[in-house]
View 1: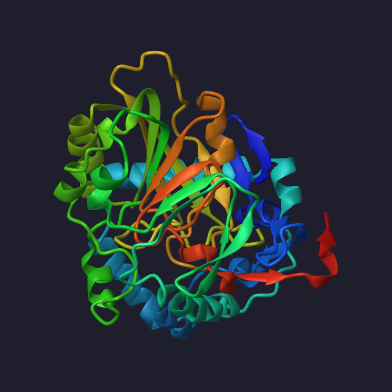
View 2: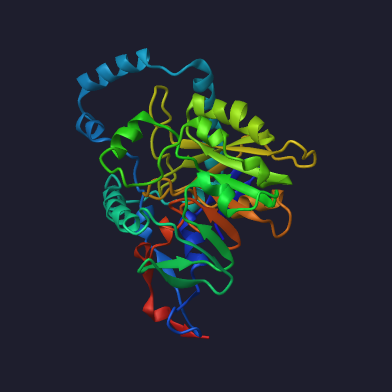
Length: 373
């Protein structure tokens, strides 16, 4: 549903297309035999130009500022190993995107507004989705048709065959059975970050509370992973966080490293959302670190694959991995997402924000597509 293009180097996927196909048939909560289509608000994916900070816009034509910036860059260059990886990812990405098939996917005639429409909408929806989730411990298990449910007096779109727990991940042992039952575990941890910590001080009620690395290491993830299971962790471009996964988390959980993949974020025209940066700052990609049980000697996952997609303007709205990870899993796998922010059919989702992107405010309903079944 989400893969637009695939080669041995990786995939171009559409997060928006995946969501729309997932909710093309939603049961009306008032009439069991009445269905309609829901569409995720596409404006959140209107990433039509590179992200520029206000000072970058202001100084775009200021040669003196550019000169000073270059001097600062020389002083703040990243270590050689980081620079080599950045160049490596950039080269793989450029070669991948320069194929004829990839070029056909993107439009070069995109109107640029510095993504203001997407950013404005994301700010509005942030507060809408947060107001019901704070201090809530909602949980549920649904095997019926995809439908809209009223939870805490708010409407949420719930996919079929899913289970969710809006709860602190430190309470995993209270809600889930530690009997090595999951074939795929996905994690998007709230990595400790001083800059984000300062911002969240203004909005203390928002988002996952950041966790120290040792807190995540102490989670009993190994007891949830099946003998032949796979675990994937989203990681920032931080040497300390990567070391924590490889040297602390994985060994503590009885997991061995398999591969490092790169999620490269692009605009609607196929350009990266920001430049590959040789200094300390944002990169246009994030890491996905993949491991398996130390007892699993059968699985072989290729290294350095690319996941290329237009990102959502909402923070931590990661692209779906269902289709691209499926070839490496058994048929009908049991899947778990920890620190989840949206639900998936046939998955268990755990975390305070598991219902965040399921709120009805993120969707529009096409009345013309209503149909009796």
